[in-house]
Image (cartoon, rainbow over all chains, first blue to last red; front, side, top):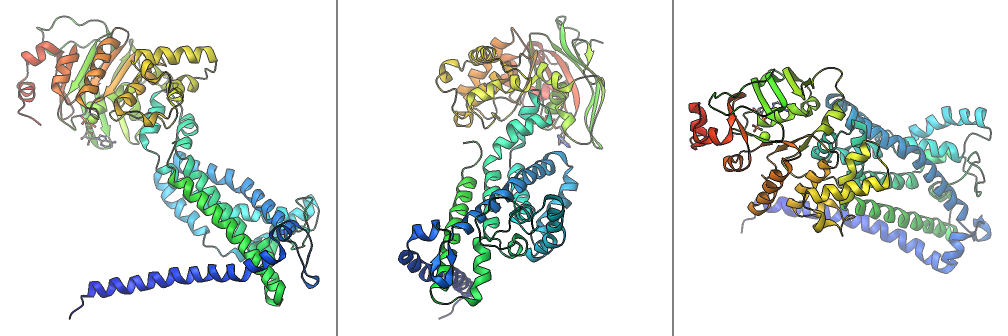
Length: 284
Length: 264
Ligand SMILES: Nc1ncnc2c1ncn2[C@@H]1O[C@H](COP(=O)(O)OP(=O)(O)O)[C@@H](O)[C@H]1O
Ligand SMILES: [Mg+2]
């Protein structure tokens, strides 16, 4: 019996694909198995809504970290979304194709800069700026939001540019032929047609912002406290896991895994929303 | 300057709404139009025919300066609307395009509701007066024979309409800005024969109020609906004249060859 090279290659790739998927599933399963029992035992509502995080005394309320994560993400989107979408519109509609062909890959390269570098810039440049001009310790919710807002720009710009580029030229021509200016054509037709892709880019960026850890640990200040101002230091869900993991045992360890479950769920929801938005093609 | 028909036996031309004279057009180094001279009669239908790639669409897009959008286009010669040069530096191109409107080959309604499509041109012009918008929308949809079909679906997405209704919506959207000239680039090529007949009938009705220029590769269509026809070949205006005469008694042997089907 002979087996052709094609067949062998097919089974090899199938095996690789299966093991890749299997290892992802295993990780997900591991996190759930480690985290879910704790959540059920401690009480999901108590876990999510109380503000006491004193692991050695058995108090595991993650509300301050949830609130901090949400504020930082919201702030990052407030900065990143308008800048990113405006940049994408400018690049795709008002810049010659040749220039765009250089700038877009450059922006996508920025996505590859390690987050520790963004964090470093945050600590060295941004935090002192905030400390001297606005007050507070500098390392703060605001600093984290600004750094994350910049970090998500490549995601927003590159997906939005693709979405705007996929808008048929016939829409632009139709608008211009009715006496619209370039800007009116973009605002009233192109952006509407590209809406779902642009929304998807923002949701994916939110996912990145929620999950980002290293840069946030470096600039957010990491105090576990419900923030009352953007200038206060805060600790996010991700930062909490990273900071406490090495020393945690028993219940404490399980509580951190449970925090992972919460993050996991949030990011799954965001990604499915983004996928749904992308599938719902323009204007329907 | 008013160009005369190529053939002296044609009846005298009515008033010209637009005139093209000694027009050369270059896409970079490639010359797509060569010394084209022809009138577009007011309240009549002028057809442009010729094999694919001869420059019909290019000539049409000269008339509302849509070619300006393509980088590297050079236009030389004179193009007049009511006797005024539309390529003069002082021309407001947006205003020109509301006076010389265009219907495209493939229906291209915007991904908006029927209502927002029809009112697009007015909103662009800054009209927000509710009563005026409603009045214009009804008048335009009626003129494009869509009112009865769509009056209960004004908030439906335009892209969900059947193709022929989409194309008539594009006509309605244009009528809403009260153009003087309507340019149509093969407006029926995406439509079936029944829908085509509807658009043709519509054009015959519209020519009472508008001057129409239609590009078509369908000679029967040109013969059926147009009053004047220009036959183009490789960027040249080979022959221009009265449609009835041009199809029965062409002056140029190349026109003869084309209409008797010896050409693509
Ligand atoms: N944007 C463009 N750039 C360069 N050449 C073009 C462009 N558009 C059309 N052409 C060329 O100009 C000629 C006339 O094109 P077109 O006016 O579209 O012809 P038609 O509408 O009669 O089929 C063709 O040879 C075509 O290849
Ligand atoms: Mg054409």
